[in-house]
Image (tube, rainbow, N blue to C red; front, side, top):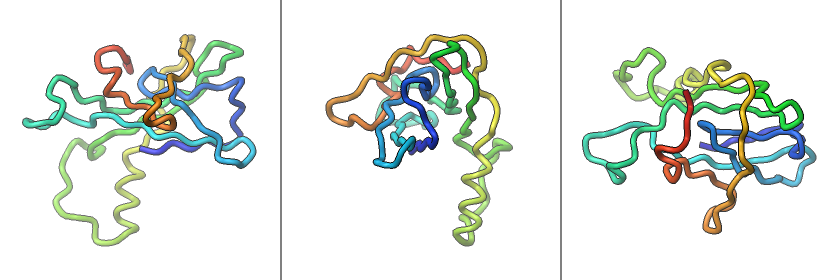
Length: 141
């Protein structure tokens, strides 16, 4: 997943995914930052990482360093909002976009006081948070 924030003040705000700080990188535009977030969406019967449990839903929180509180966020469901499988492939790009948008909810974040550590940047992928490395340590609810 890709995250992009605008009108961002990096000295004040921290973006957290499932309780782990996201290493946002500047885009060159004032106040605009991006990052990638890798996570294991679900637990298929046969998987590359059998010891890492599914990490969905993905909960993104905006933390205000000045107040020490989460001030907003969203939830990304990794499956159909009703929990069912789609019966067919999307018929066009608009249908596919509607499916993607339906999985984002502007609620479900973790409001209130929380301490979020500074982002740990990977030497291999400095613009990406890999939540699989935090399996068992990250909490999202």
